[in-house]
Image 1 (cartoon, rainbow, N blue to C red):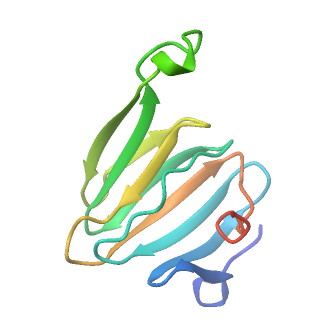
Image 2 (tube, helix red, strand yellow):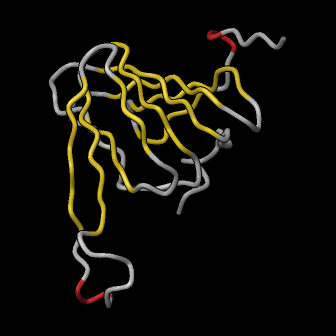
Length: 130
């Protein structure tokens, strides 16, 4: 068993007010607590990990982007289509590996949540992005 104390856990802010805290995890699964300030949105992104996003407090909107036509179609005929789900306290959403998404706090109040990644992802995901 490996205990992670929240107060001593590795913490960083990819952007001002967007706090992330690395909790228990390993190569198979990782858990990150986050705080998202009012009006903040992560950029549209994807990753090799499946993800559960669970809202602990406040409200978040998860936007996904998918192509409206099959991959076999020429790129010029493909169109991105965005789908959105508004999550309230204790609501969650599953995101498939490589599913493009962004998480937005459209409210005037801060929101907190947990991200669970399968397989686990390195905690420096946001700091290593260009």
